[in-house]
Image 1 (cartoon, rainbow, N blue to C red):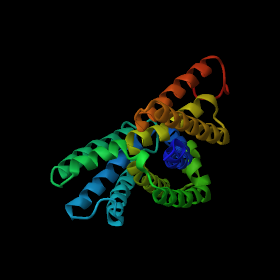
Image 2 (image 1 turned 90 degrees about the vertical axis):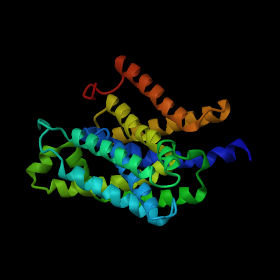
Image 3 (image 1 turned 180 degrees about the vertical axis):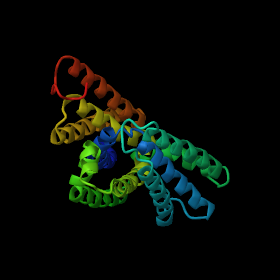
Length: 279
């Protein structure tokens, strides 16, 4: 098998993940809930491990249902604990961290009770990007396309609540309900991404492109374009170096995101970008 044939499936998987995760990352940065994906990913992992307690085969549709149910619980908790004011005494990030810690501890307890639990926990961290199949890629593309249509149809609500929550409150929207829908769709995205890319890569895909984009502009359209471009470039560089230097793919892609972030910070110091952008 040629190098092109070997790296093409991981490349396609990365492009699909970047398209969805880098956009959602803009919402995460605007909402100031940076670690929400880690918490939802850990809830999904807990759900998948819990399925093993009932002797469900790993990676079966039933296992995904367990993961989605656990993610839905996380989405409900995050919608319930949303703070109406940024000056709240307890920021939502604190609740998100608590959910992550408790879910992680519960996952360890469950892993000790099921055969292969340790391997399952390790897979949630590193994923299996190099071994992704075309069948999995097609399923991921279809699911993310449907989720993309969902977010496009409700973009006004989601964008307003993320970027201008005061206006959403003034219009009398049921923000907790819309938050639940947002986090539930977010959880579906994470549940599908973690088995492929792992928690570390998913976090990088989600947060780093959005941070880089916010360094240069506050315009929503340009934010999206910069985030997509940055995510694609980091993935391409990581995959290329992984193949040519025979290095682990996932960690190398994460490091490329770090390198691009440093370059972006340096460019910002030299005055590149909008004056109104986040410093």
